[in-house]
Length: 155
Length: 73
Image (cartoon, rainbow over all chains, first blue to last red; front, top):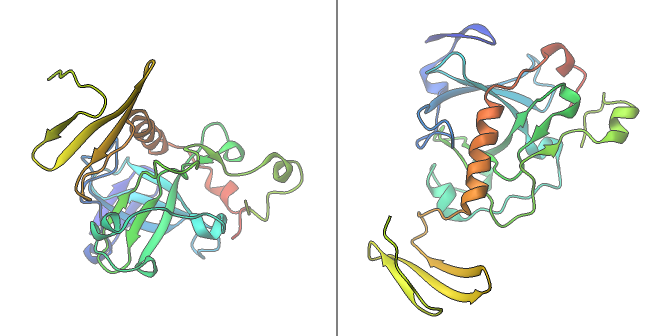
């Protein structure tokens, strides 16, 4: 399969690699099918892209949330996981959306509503964790990191 | 919109399996209890709306791919 994208030019992908969001993503419910890939070829950063295969102009920038925030914890009930295929947390990969405003340095990520992607069923969903204090706009980099070095990229 | 008056302790049933109960009324704050099957998602509306808004913004985020290389795992 092939899709012309705004950000990455023409992408080739296999149908089996498509990730289905059965209910879409809140605010963009009409798009259901995406492909996920690391932001750099070596996969050496915690960043990923989620590109719609239905609209070449639609893509998200994702954070491998546990790689970046090792203390992050996910509070969701089994029914949420059952929606995309069930199993244990071992079957799920957890990401968060990143929003970049002016520059990468002021980017924020939505820790309140992680993205779950099931390894076996290739289904995904966004879960809103109402009863946590996690922020919708958590800064990715704190000011001390910015003033010294951001090369480590750890939060 | 259907509008019903309820007192504290009273509730409404929706579709036979969702109960919305007024727990307490205190000044301009109403405490509401909701009992629903597990697959029914209940969220504070403003939280849900801000997630939608942030998603739309995230979908149009601009990323400098060169700058990314500085951020190693």
